[in-house]
Image (cartoon, rainbow, N blue to C red; front, side):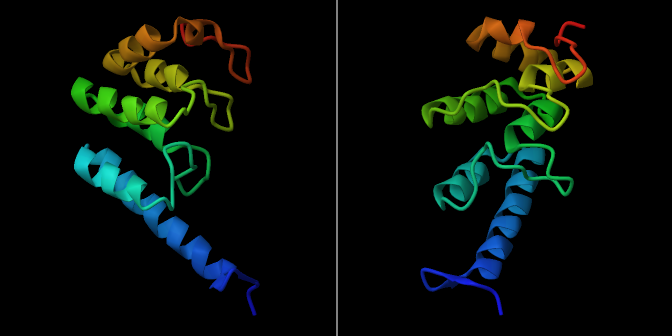
Length: 133
């Protein structure tokens, strides 16, 4: 039987987190900012949580990797910084948000990220590459 934590089964909590992560992933892919806010307001997942099956990629990595709409990207990044979430988070390859934007050729995301934090240009991933490389 799964352990109970404050009256909620740990297994049930994990299922709820997984479900919300899937919903957040879909909302980001669809660039549905209203739905992103609704999901985040529930407090089950955050923009820093790993939301892919491989548990490699955060919601913010997905946003900069797939989002081409400058307004949507800016709004999502504003949510992150509003909640004091740093934009230098890494995935399992050590890639920052700027690395991901560079890898997929998302110049809009790269511009926004560099405007907010120029130091991201010099951060190296696990293979010692900067986003410019």
